[in-house]
Image 1 (cartoon, rainbow, N blue to C red):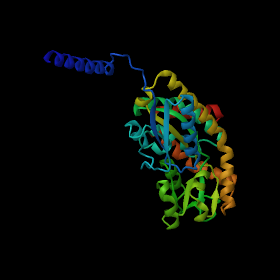
Image 2 (tube, one colour):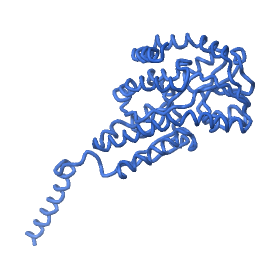
Image 3 (cartoon, rainbow, N blue to C red):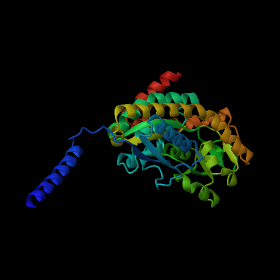
Image 4 (cartoon, rainbow, N blue to C red):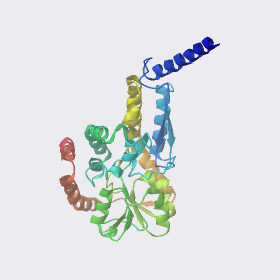
Length: 341
């Protein structure tokens, strides 16, 4: 009886040691688990193009990796993030994947503020040129300083001013109480004599309805998301800036995947990025038409108005570059050379 008991104890001990050996490398583990699930955050409403793009990315990643990587998207700020903190949130793996307004996280990473320098770019094509020049710099800073991999960068249509009163001159902008989404936008509104209000998107509608603000600096999709026609009357498409969204993944999580899976994800990311850049111009017109059909009047700016705004914002651009990381000046110089300015 004692002998049988010793054999049983021995067999149990062997089983335990075998399991430990497997867990510690007794059997060579794959570089990644059989399947992983990443939670992905979007602060934008479900119907916004950035949320739609992120959902499409998740579907394509699942297909490309044959179910090895599943991305579960939460839209509309459901996870409680408002935006400016998202570089830190992804760095610390509080959420593995997130979209984030590039300039909206410039408080943590100043280089990202270059995207929305007022009137640096003059059209959509130049926005893509700026993005392509800046991308290697952005990749480097994201990986080395913020422990995350940029998957893709998606554009927004250029930002104009949505207001209760018609705006067709710099004089008409004085005294406005305007919601802005980043520091450059705030500096711009101050330069024309308005007061910027850096409100999260979730507070914009109620602030317009109660008179806290009387105007918004933003793009056409955001105006549709916010149903601005219920509280505003005019849109001045002055193309002050053209924002972008970063979609990033925590680098530690990304590096757990084998190289083949990583490459499949990056290939999907490139496909989605190209798709979103191609679609944004048409979407801009579509969103403007929806706003017009619901009562918003578009007031096209005169060239004189645009020239005045460009001159007023020149000092903002120069001041920003003086205090920006050294890489920023390299980006702007390369951009100006390429577009012939």
